[in-house]
Amino acid sequence: MADDAISHLASLTAQRDRELLDVSLAQGVLELLGAVSVGVYRLVGPEEEARHWLCSGLARRGQLTVSDPVWADMDALPSEDHFPLRQQALGNRAIAQTELPGSACPEAEGRFVCVLPLLVEIGSPGVLEVRSERTLTPAALRPIQTLLRVFANFQSLLESSQRDALTGLLNRQTFDATFLRASMPSERGGLPVEPERRVGGTTGYWLGVIDIDHFKKVNDGYGHLIGDEVLVLLARIMRQTFRHSDRLYRFGGEEFVVLLRGGTEADAFGAFERFRELVEGYAFPQVGRVTVSIGFTEVQLQDTPNAAFSRADQSVYLAKHQGRNRVVGFESLVRSGLLTDNGQHIGDVELF
Picture 1 (tube, rainbow, N blue to C red):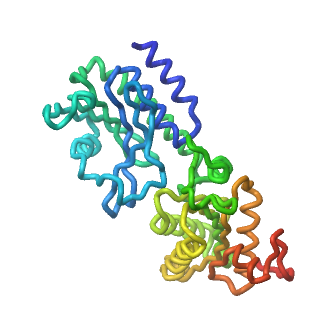
Picture 2: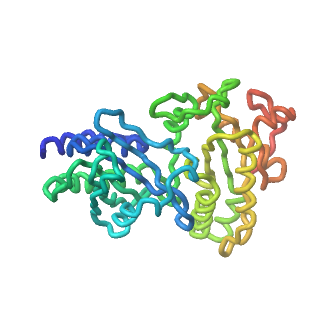
Picture 3: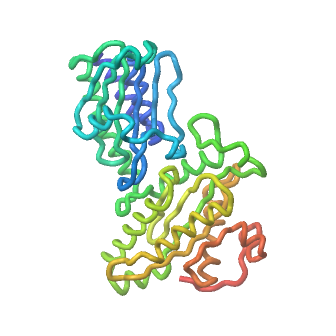
């Protein structure tokens, strides 16, 4: 079994896709234990609100490994307290195991449930849930616990390399791969879209660029430490405003990016406008009032990261030209004649 564990460990640490890492873990543990099923479940949602369990990898004997889509409706997911054994394992940071009554679990789903906490420092808290036909002995669990310790270290390293050190948001280097999955949707491993959003070569994704107004004045007037605090607080407001399935990035300096999934142009505008209002109404320590200018565009099928970002960035330029502290959509600017389809704008004004 030691050789098998090392082999699975090598396969696991070769994975660089954060969203497929849990799938690899579930499949590897299933093969090691010969269990009925192995699932990786993550708690998603703001900590101050009721959280829900997202299945990020479920391997079952004789079946393909599956997972919930990362954009799943939070309210459709089971609530945290629906699975007390998972809560117990995660809360105590220890293994929790029980036998299910015969009437509560069909034989094909396993009679015994063993839950192991995923002890990760970065990323969503979660558990590994094993269903088996017999109770798992300490000897059987020992290599799995070792595998989970290595998994925790590897996930922390992977998360650290893909996140901005100051704000904890995703960094610029992770953007291209996620964007390409959105602009080239597929049935497996990508970010598929609803059929009704395929019309006209669109994907159902919206790319927003957020730029802090007059941020240089903050750094010059209050110092870079206070400027960094503004960036950290802005990132916190982003997490509280957008959904867990939306991708939030810091591109550097005072520039942030959101990859928003689903909805109409009006829905996207509403989401960005809500964020703008929250920032405007927030009392930043020492600085007081801070505002943002936001430009957004719809991601097209076969779009490139640079092309979409350029459209959103042109919208930010016009938002600042129109007075700052506002949300502007590229498509609405084209319809109004302020921008052309190739992104050419009127005038040439110094905005920064």
